Length: 564
Image (cartoon, rainbow, N blue to C red; front, side, top):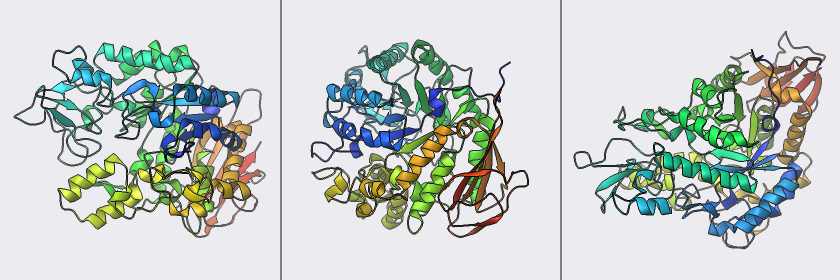
């Protein structure tokens, strides 16, 4: 029987991933939109940071209703981003620097401008009709009561054929019919195309949604996301992913991570279990749900630290020896880390460093979203016109224009929660447009770019960038940070997060890492757990070096110790 305490070593467990949102990363031609040649320009910067894998948000051909997550051609590059020749040059540049490329696989839905859907909606007897999910009206209305992630019904009526099609997201993102074997073959062939070019794996967008319950029954309840129990982690989802693994994934030395809306720990073990032959790891959303008002997606609540610690501890403990964690604070769909979980004012650098000390010392593969390495913050949105995101505008139409809600109250909530916070252009320097573009940027630059930018960070030895660089190096040099078994201490402490990582490997002396994190904006008294050996040496931290002993911690202080 496999020893669950001995974690098999693989490159994707030891990697640090950097996510690029290409539209906002670097514009090379002055049209205000980031592009592949802009990425090429900055590959040396990413190599200097020390990351191993670049996850590229979609760069496929798209009409951009949802910024590239509505794909009209899976085998072509978005016009604004460049050409396939640019892509190949970028991939070669990534590989020549010893890094790998993770592509975004978006196959729950396509754009309504994809040729498959153009054919599908042309007539009921078209060969492509069954590529999507079409249903007759029910009592003259939608086939069921499901609602879209982007507000409103999840169905769009097509007058020409007299039926509705399902779209769990925008009405310009019709859901593919995964029950159709031909659709699955098309997807697998497309995946082989990109792997054949040399890509090193996939981040799979909303991968838990592929399988819908037969009959598409009405959802329970009358508020929130209605119907999700019938398509999140659906009845055939594991069958589909095992088939994908058998037909494609298992034939390459690649990395896979599935974005799994509604996933539980038990389900995650099914998706990423060591012997399940599905995926390497999943993105889960338990931490992201904590600061939401349970009755309003846009509402916000304060999160007591023990609640946050419990989420991370549960995933660390219950996946140990069974499946691999993914570790992230933010991505293109979330607010900025330091604005959400830290202090983006007085303690911006300290709290950002503390938060990423945590991320780099847990078991799992860490993901850094662009701009996090310099401590970028949430932006300033004066009015609804400043937002680009289709989700924001759909919600505004439903709740303010049609629902007559208080616009100021909703706007305040949106300013904090909006996905556009993560999508404002990368802040490269203090010149016009933050050095992102010589033209007008597609989305308004965060006004704090004069103080927060890459040029400033590279020049400051105490910057978030240089600390992140040290964290990545520390993780690479200390296998205990990657593979060590996790144990938490003083769970009820409302200021401190304390845990250890222990690595015992055959023929080697056991190594223990102790992690001390102050999650508060004031001093905290640290009482060393009795089990912790004071002989451990200081390994890394965001304040002055200090011994492992009872002492007063500074606001947002992080300290890591090693005993070997």
